[in-house]
Image 1 (tube, one colour):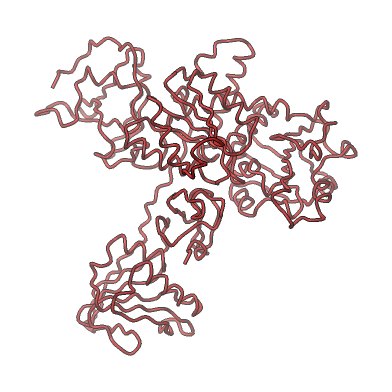
Image 2: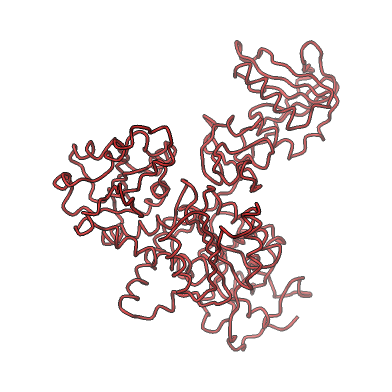
Length: 638
């Protein structure tokens, strides 16, 4: 109810804007009284600290940047069609927006505070290059002894937790020192003496730790469970909102053989330094243990920062890159070649000048490689007789550590010009400072590129079929008995083999809890497609109200392309055609087939099962956490 004021002095300190608040515009020309939630103008200024999200509502596109009047700390006021529009703050839930981003969809906000780095794709190529450019500026400032304050979070109330459930030296120590650079609280979490030994889940542990800081918590997590940070970002993000603490950020320091995004970011920064920041193209060799090496898996998406990518994969069959990563490289437009050994690779003329090695992890392969260890090592180990066959300007990279007895990059390379792995390891400190700067809100307001695109599910997969009135009644039969009133599920697995049809019917009966419902089921020849069979389930005791929207979604996930027919007085009055859903999640009867995934039942982390459709023909899904591809039938555990 306070009048609009223009003479306010700048506030002494701007406090951070909570993540669950968004800005939108309100006409204030003739307000009868301030709407619920409106703040007085003089009290509205204080919470503003960074540019809010771009908000699209009712075709009004408004982007409010504090930088326009940042020196005064005032909130901008805009004029549209003669209406004075000012800012007000409201809960996202009041507008039906995503409480994480304050968006209706489309893209992430152009700032990074509260974001997580679970996989490389959590940053768009432009956002990745922003990280690399900021790292370059930081590195130059440090070496020239210039002021590095602009890169610092400088908030002693922010907490950085290092949770390493697997051994680490370089990643752990570089992050610890990076956190100390920022002046944050640094907590090195000792997993060996924690409640993990009391069988506590990592989810419960992290929730508890979030409450031990008055400001944002940033978690650096290394785990053998794949997809850990993706799950924590989701579930702990909701927890932070519920208990009223700033949204936590999670940085993946390596999860099983899935990904290692922060290693990838320092690798790409090192490549860019070597190429003098030329992003037009890159040609490189990936060799070593490409099967288990999560650092090479991350290159599937990390190399997209270059406009043209040529990748030569050099590894014997037992160590070759998993097919799903090769397929993603090809889908990203990479030119991919395969070779079984370095010797085979050097027999051809088009040899890359950037080589990326990974150590062999033969201990993970057990009896499968008995008697072949020496052959596998020789296939991917550099030897002195190879010097003359590689370009003179070649550079060798390695995430380290090297095996002290069987290094794929022998120590005789250390004093040569091929050694790029030593300066590469130093870059980890600088890139990780910037990653913390971005997630902690110190950097990002000047980002001007294309942000990460947020995947939104908008496809309607439950289709109501318009019924054409012919005057005749079409009987729906199950076996020999017509259905006068009730429901009939038709076209179940039409065209598939009989065994699969029966299995799908059994799955349907269990998941939809139809075991105690009067009805019949069977497999019959299709009348519309001669020579094929289909399943039919008759439910004469049920009405249309049984199949709520949620139940229809479940049915579409169980048996895509089936139809649900509503029968009244021997006539089909309503028909639904159910298509393959874009996402299948939160069923007790589904499970990821990767036993190392955070969502796998045996790991008891109680992560919600979640699969995202990648293709319709054939129907394939990938786990939302470990990203393992699955055929449609494989996701069901019954």
